[in-house]
Amino acid sequence: MDIRNTAGGSLQISQDVIAKIARLAALEVDGVAEVSSGSTQSMRGLLSKTSLQKDVSVSMKDGVAAVTVHVIPYYGSKVMPVCKKVQENVKQTIQIMTGITVTRVNVVAAGLAEPRATE
Image (cartoon, rainbow, N blue to C red; front, side):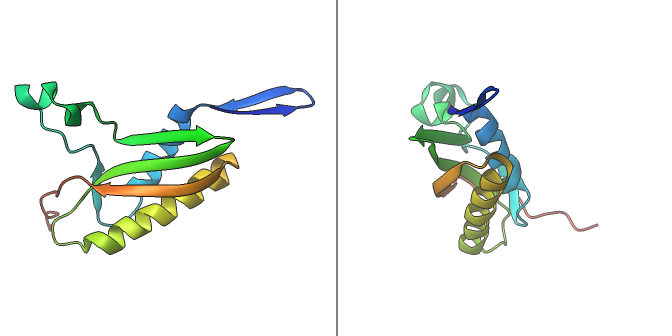
């Protein structure tokens, strides 16, 4: 949690809020189908460590954030450029909305979505 003291009291931004901003910023990027840890819903998946991973994790140290986002790109999209755009958009959006410095955004391509249906 980022806590800043002001003349009128303190301002706090929870890591859950930062994670939500990161998730929505990742979904804004063309080529991202969803933000997901990519875990399976089988019984084995429910009991494995991968099913316990969060879609987005945020760690704060000295008022500076490091973010990890698990994305599912669409099949047919260029995965590396999509992930790079996710990095840029997540970092910029968090910094603009919260004023918190983001040192790094790790992006994990955790799966691949079916191609978009053309209508």
